[in-house]
Image: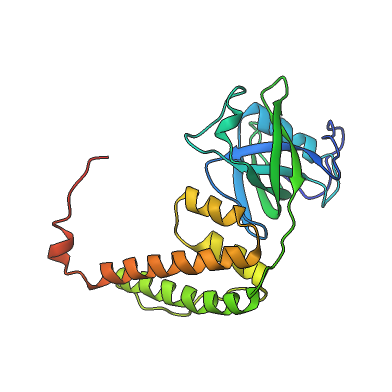
Length: 241
């Protein structure tokens, strides 16, 4: 096992990008937000080659695009419409290389992008022409952030109560409206379609406003679960799917 923290010698460099960017893509069945970690196990040849390319670059430049898959687990070279239009730039921070050629990597979300077009290299690795998106705060972002802090605490307490647990201490959210909006988006238990709506929000304020709506809904559902008698819950319709 080899751990890389500096550029590895003798590797083929990835294409460097700036402005409207040509970025290698890693489609995933999950949504990444700026500031949040993304551990990955890399075993497919095309993505192993991507990691090798990134290792030739200096720290801070080892970037690729994470974009969500609308349905299924994978997209082929002729299914670009299966990808969402907005994704997140990820920066590779740590790499562990295994003797069989696999990599374990840790990446961190950096900034959002809009996917303008998609192409594929000979080995199937996707790349996109992307435009980095700004993060306007919008009106009332500070006030909304404070409300989200309070509602998130209520949500966590409701989840714990639904599981019959007592809180040791509540998780702390970061300061700042932008950081709060992304931290909550990553933490709340939602399906990928709703997570994608949060990623695509036009402003920080819009994201926080949507989070308030979703947190209130999820908190109410958790509280309802915690107040149901066990016998009533056992009578819910059963599905084998």
